[in-house]
Length: 246
Image (tube, rainbow, N blue to C red; front, side):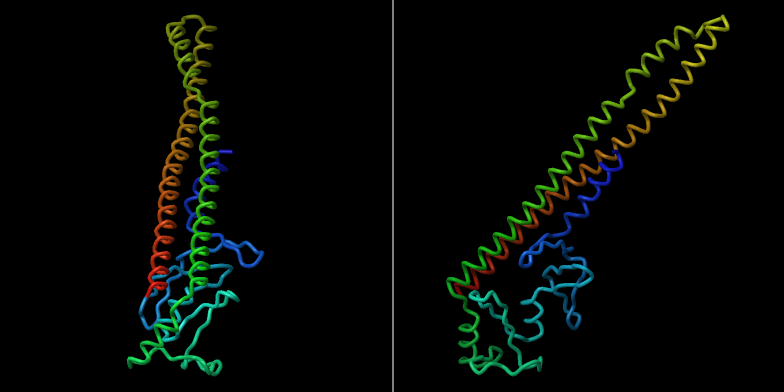
C-alpha cells in the first residue's frame, strides 16, 4: 500500500506534464513540450506534442516560418496551407499571394487572413473547451493524489508505535534493578521488543515523511500546471481577438 501511495504521488508530478485530448471518438494522452523544434536554428516557441513515438508540431507556427500561408475552413473544420515552395500540388486559382511587399498585396494578405464571425466563435469555443478539458483532467488527478495522501496518513496513524514504545520503556525501568533470574530475563525481553518497535517506527516515519514531501511537490505541480493552462487560454484568446479585429 505504501508503494502504491508513493507511486501515485510521484506519478502525478510526471503525469501533469501530459495532456489528454480527443481525435474523433478516440481519447489519447500526449506529452507536451518534450521535443523542441528549430527551423534553420530558429526555435519554435509553441508547445509540441509527443504521442506514440511521433512528435506533433503547431501547424501555424511551422507553416509561417517556412513561408506558407495558413487559413481555416470552419465549415469543414479543415486547416488550409498555401505555398509556392512545397511543390506538392498547384496553388488554387483563387489563391492570393500574401508575401508581396506591394500595397495591393498587403491588402490581399489582410483580407485572406481575416476570419469571419463564425470562425471566431468556433475557435473561441475550441480554446475554452480545451482549457476546461485540461482543467478537468488536472482536478481528477489531484483528487486521486489527495485520496492517496489521506490513506497514507491513516495507515501511518494505525501503525504508529509511539505509545507502545513509551509503555515498554516505563515497564523496562521497573525491571532495571531486577536481581532475580526471572526478572532479568523479562527485562531483556522488554529491551529487545523496544529495539524492534523503534526500528519499525523509524521505517514508518521515513515512509510517511516521503509521502508528505511528494504530496507537497505534487501540490506545487498541480498549481503550476493549472496556472500554465489558464495563461495559455488567455494568450490564445487574446491572439484570436487580435486576429479577428484586425
